[in-house]
Image 1: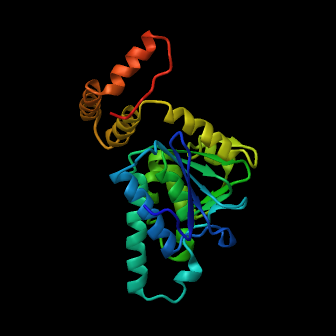
Image 2 (image 1 turned 45 degrees about the horizontal axis):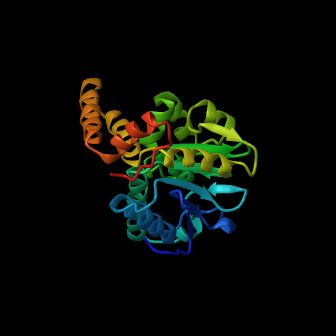
Image 3 (image 1 turned 45 degrees about the vertical axis):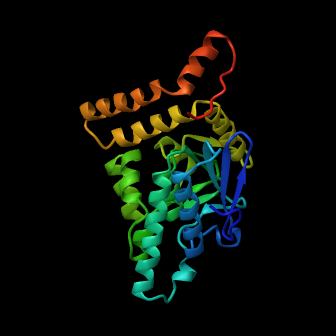
Length: 264
């Protein structure tokens, strides 16, 4: 992971929050090839060595858009081979976000269309301003969702509603997104990052290995039948028994103090 990028910005806090901001507000924070490389670099690095980071907040620059989807001006006139090569990069980027071992919170500051909504769905949960709008518009452009959207959306809203959203390509409101489970909570303009940070700080105060194992178990368990999921849960649980953080949690409880977790 680099110290600086051209299409995104990074900001880290002492308590372990990494803010990743999509920083192309002049084009609705549209996803171009450079942003694809940079997001893949960041989330790929977190999977290998997260350092002091315990939680990620993903947001967009400006007040109008979280991400308007792929940069169609960049795609205009490119060859089929270039399109496929770019999309291979995007696929890996989305998968890196989805597979991030740390909790990832989306702070939706504006419109989240196409790839922007798919980014939201690749995060663990999200908060949005009431004025935000959402859509998967790919079928109106002769393509289809290819950033995990056909798989993540049905798992959130159900098959029938997902088909309606994807096959019509029609936008929907933040209130609908919240009602359908795409967004966890709504807030007024200017407040979405504060809400995300409040929750992120709460997560960062918990045992980091416990948080990772719990996230992994939920994610993997949903791909299994119930019996297999329960076995996976116990396997993940048992790995925490021998950790120093487990011992610290019990000590702190009995000593009536705040635990100090070190991630081992």
